[in-house]
Image 1 (cartoon, helix red, strand yellow):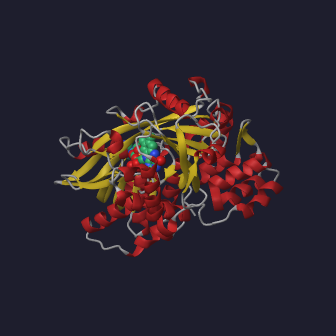
Image 2 (cartoon, rainbow, N blue to C red; image 1 turned 90 degrees about the vertical axis):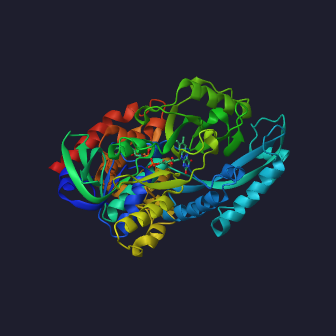
Image 3 (cartoon, rainbow, N blue to C red; image 1 turned 45 degrees about the vertical axis):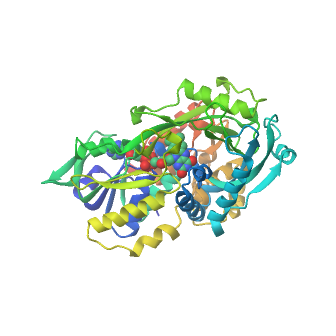
Length: 521
Ligand code: FAD
């Protein structure tokens, strides 16, 4: 079971670790889990909440990346498709199959025959782990599937399969798995500087962002997994360190599904700049993304601006002309920075490969840069292999565990058997579905809370299926410290309600405070 509290600065200040991992996004979480499973003593320090950086601002796809085939990155697609199959096994509640419609238009940059060839290769690379083989369809059959698609110029299309996940909850699940394996994990714990002995990095100075207290943590190896902040941390080691990253901003917006009318996930080319884009279903919502523009701004202040929204709305309207979406339809938006490897400065952002690289700094810190949500386990494996070599410790034994040990909630392949328990408690069918999808095999723990205290069955918000028990669970098991941790990343009320969860804020605040009192009492 996951330790229920984040590690404190007092813990981290007195204990030494083999690895101190900076950054609690998917990359740092994956490294902490892999290293702890191999028996290393691990500390993970996250400056804000786990997953609050890029890892909760993605397109939420666990995918091979069909479009990367166009650029010839076959090995990256193969690797990501293998990971898609592994993650569907480790966390079946969070990583779920998704059918995509790919319409073919006369004006497409990629002709239909080439797209069909690409889909055949995509299925072939997925091998035994494939979700399902693609099918090609004529124009009429495609319009039966997606009746509101633009008809002029449409020649037919295809249906193919990938997977979708709740990125913030996946990150959280990996952090919890790391803690279960013995890692000390601390959110709201910022690395403010590094500690040196001679020419070696030997630890870091940490600040608890909630209390303001500070401590020093000593370790044998520091790992910089801070995503878009990677170059900032590298400069703590060496102010003259050359930049490794090229940051590109990606924005999404969310509208009610009924306003656009898509029935599936759609992949299409924006007529505005011929970039590949997605229209993706999310319960009764649809989100549209993404932009891909160079951004040298502050990673702490990234958000979707008006030009991003206009681009996304115009692109979606071009393919669903009847929707006539406007800014008034936008329920929520989010943006993140892709920590891509700085390669050829003349290439367009979309052409930069999503591979990763490990770099050793001048005073011994390892930085990992690049990658994707989908391939976090591969990144973690490569980093921990390298760390083991640096530490002169051969730890191959636990390597296979990362592939086979389920993430929290992923232990039960089938969760429908839990549904009657929830219905017996008087929860609505939509609330039970909501819980099963987010908590998988851990859903009975939420039912147990509801059984102990009937008031925890109450909805948190009039327009959302979430219930009060989730706040207690977030505090007790999921390291939630603030209202936004709950509203934004544990339950997503901020993006799934028109008032961004305002109607639930007071209840969340009261329940969080109560859970804290219970702990200290
Ligand atoms: P982050 O998640 O940003 O984590 C870095 C963490 O380091 C942050 O939480 C930050 O607070 C912390 N940190 C920074 N400074 C400090 C400090 N001093 N002390 C302690 N902690 C610190 N990939 C996919 O596979 N599928 C997709 O559909 C997909 N869509 C995407 C869409 C967009 C718009 C973007 C931007 C990316 C997308 N990606 C996708 C890529 C994927 O989201 C990222 O590669 C991944 O989330 C990066 O994770 P990370 O842990 O490296 O970085």
